[in-house]
Each structure stands twice: as C-alpha cells, then as structure tokens.
Amino acid sequence: MRIKSVKYLILTILAAASFSSNAETVIKLATVAPKDSIWHENLKRVDARWQAASNGQVRLRIYAGTLGDEDDILRRVRVGQLDAAAISMAGLSSIDSSTKAMHIPLAFTSNEEMEYVRDRIALQLEPILAAKKFVVLTWGEVGWVHFFTKQPVKTPDDLRRQKLFVWSNGDSSDSERLWQDLGFNTVSLSSIDIMPALQTGMITAYQAPPLMALANQWFPFTGYMTDLKWAPLSGATVVTQRAWNKVPEAFRKELVDIARNEGLKLQHEVRKLEQEAKDAMVKRGLEIVPVNETDMQAWLSAAEAGYPGIRGAVVPEEFFDETMRLRDEFRAGKAEK
Image (tube, rainbow, N blue to C red):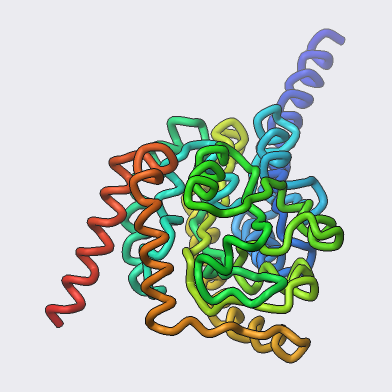
C-alpha cells in the first residue's frame, strides 16, 4: 500500500510539472486606441503570431479604448492589474521624461529624418526604461501632429486666440507652462475628455495626428486643420519586467522579433493611411488651411523660442542635444549626397 502511495505521489508530481510547463501565460495589455482601429488590429496580429510561435503558451489579452487614458492604464500596470501597454509619448513620459526627445516641435521635416533619429535615440532609451522595469517590445508612431481648430489657423497668433487642448498625462505641467509662457491659452485635459470639451466649447483647438482625429471622431467639431507637421507623435509597446519574466525564456527573443516586425508593418500602414484619413475628413467637410513660407517662418520662430524652455525642463538636456545632433547629422549626410 505504501509503495502504491509513493508511485501515485510521483505520478501526481510529474503530471503537475507537465501541466505547469505547458501552462498558458497571458499578458494583459491595454491601449487608448479605439477598438478595431489600426493600432488595435496590429495588436491582434501580434497576439495571433505569439500564440502560433509559442504553441499556445503565450498570448495577449487586449483592452482597446476601455480603460481610460494613458495615465489610468499605467496606474493599473504599476499595481499589477495590467502587464503591458501600447502608449504614446504622453504615457511614456510618465515613465521617463527622456522619451519626449522625439516630440520637439518642428525639429523634423520628413519621415526619413524622424526615423533616422528615432532608431538611434531608441537604443539609448531602452536601457533607461529597463532600469524602470519595463521591456520595450516595439517602437512605433501614431503620425504627424497637426492643429485642428474651430476657426482657421494660419499663424501662431491665430492659434493664440483659440482655447488649446494640452495633454494632462504624465509630467505635463512643464509643457503646459511653456505653452502659456509663449502666449497660448491652454486647457489641460485627459485625452478621453477631448470629445465632451469640444462639445461644450471648453476647448476650440487640439493637437493630434489625422488618424487619431478620425478614429476618435473629434474632427467633426473642428472644421479646420492647419497644414503644418508640428511634431511626430511616437509611442511604444512596453511590458513590465515582472510579467516578461513569466514568459518562457525560450520564446522571448522570437516574441520580441514578432512584435517589432508587426510594428514595422504598422509604421508603413500609418504613413499610408495618414493621407487617406485627411482625404476622408475633407470629404466630410474638413478644410485644410495652407501655411505659406512667411507663415512657416513665424511657426519656426515660435517653436525655437520655446527650445530653451524645453531643453532641461521638458526634455533632459543630453537627450535634447542628442536629438538635434542626430537630426543635423542626417541633414548633413543628405546634403553630401
């Protein structure tokens, strides 16, 4: 009887070990992107490929547009209710302000220039985020930020007459103060409050990429979009080190490779759809306000007037300087060709 009991115990332990080795690891990930948006569809593709690559052992549970703004999502991540987040610079900056390096106004003029800088800055940002216990699965972009307004805006002075939404996510107080120091009338809100604020007239202008304005249906409340690439809105998909440690080590590299491969596809998709989003909004009444050379100089002067306030207070000095150095390096290389 005792021998049978021992055998039964051994078999039970072996069965439990076998079950444990094949147990499913679920990464709970949230994003403010709406359900069925291109960002949500991208995460669904990552999930499908993760499940295939891990024989069903690792998967994502995705919450799209249901858990509040990026600050809300990161609070849930920090207390362990969520494991990961697909967030923009606004959310990333609450992890570390150095991630704002890619959001310097009018520092970039093209996707190629921005990508050159971002890919090199990312290599410096990843160890910083790792020190904060976050693993970067992939970097991405949301598109070029434009001003959407209830009245036509061609110049900075036109924008100063609007009630301008600014992000209240993360450590945004320095950014808001800088806008105010430059004479702009700001209203600090969460991104989930943009719609009601537009409906009530609390704000009359906001800054967003065209795809976001279309996906969130903000644009019907602002009849004009200024034809000015103010800054690229970058982002990343990050997972806590705590959750990542639960993923079997044999799968980790391949899963990161999948996320980055899908991130690259999303980048191409965002760039392709950005013009289509503009066209779709124009068909529904949006008017694009042109910016001539004289107006562009006024915008550049306004942006550059803010650089001393951005360097150090908003973006750490070393990252501000490195971003501009890389930007100039790209331009010099392009000029040599």
